[in-house]
Amino acid sequence: MGVYLDNNATSPMDPKVLESMRPFFLKQFGNASSIHALGQDARAAVEIARSEVAKLLGARPREVVFTSGGTEADNSAILGVARRFWNKPAHIVTSGLEHPAVLRTCDALRGWGFDVTFLPGSPEGLVSVEDVESALKNETVLISIMYVNNEVGTIQPIEQIGQLANRHDVLFHTDAVQAVGKIDVNVKKLGIDLLSLSGHKFHGPKGVGVLFIRDSVNLEPFLLGGSHERRRRAGTENVPGIVGLGEACRLARDRLSEMDRVKLLRDRLEKGLLGQIEGAKVNGNTDQRSPHTTNISFSGLEGEALLIALDFKGISVSTGAACASGSLEPSHVLQSMRMSKDRIRGAIRFSLSRMTKDAEIDYALQVIPETVDRMRQVGM
Image 1 (cartoon, rainbow, N blue to C red):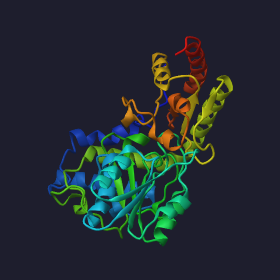
Image 2 (image 1 turned 120 degrees about the horizontal axis):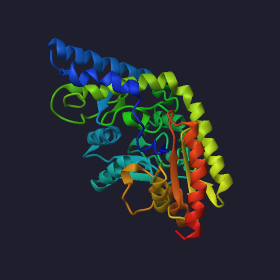
Image 3 (image 1 turned 135 degrees about the vertical axis):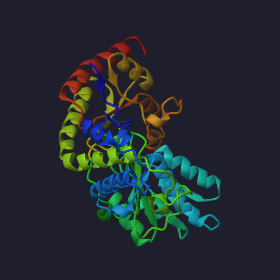
Image 4 (image 1 turned 30 degrees about the vertical axis):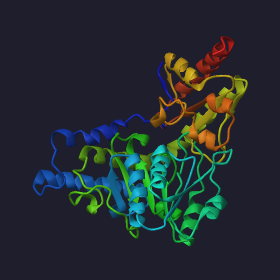
């Protein structure tokens, strides 16, 4: 039996998404910038998708800019703000819990002369609003704090940080890649200026994402060239991908209530593993978190070894972010939460989706305790 519990890395495409995309590969293949009928059909499809994204976010369609994914959106938001202050004193506030697409961009800016504050996470994986406020300076131009952590699932106090940023007239960006499609996200209510999302994290296609840019925000263009995306991101639009993303957003809006069932499955998995496996501990806040993620440490085990053993049994899990797989470095998220080396070493991330089935959880609860027990007996 194949059990997929690594949906934070990528999620299976919804069949309805695939069907929405299919015509734009074969028959309606026009360039959305062309003025003939084929081109205008493509343009109309892009704009319908833009509207669907806007509805999901509580935004205006003109505030939606299509990108190649979450990494480009994160980079474009941070660098787009930074370019406005290239030869001026400028300060950025972020956290050690962020995705590498944010961390490495901010680290590069620090190397280029920007002042960057990397706030630590609490032992529960949360960023303190008070710490964000204390870090602000007269030169602060941007706060970038992720919405839902990709490794432990904690939900940051985004609305309070948005209010804080607004009071201090500082731009606020959030990487919402693990939030959109899983919890309700409304950019107006939350006071967000810039937001990143990626289609393949909620049953859409890979290679397409969005950067929401509030109308009032003056952002330097991401890519230079043609006048695509209101001159903010040059390049021929990925029409099939954009159409698929639009359909994924429509489905997410209609099916958001299904995440209640996902939460019940996640909680059953978590409770079952903690009840059967001695020394298993949940990492991160268990109240203020998304419904689809749990991160559990198994004492005395190497997480990578357990991952491989479970893979042989048909269970797909992760030890952290997919972008960091192959790295010998321990999780920077768990390090920022100041966890012990043993707890970090034995951590496994389980991430579900609305396509996760009860039978998959049943199988996982049978196989994982057996596997952990066997590995402990042989000293792995």
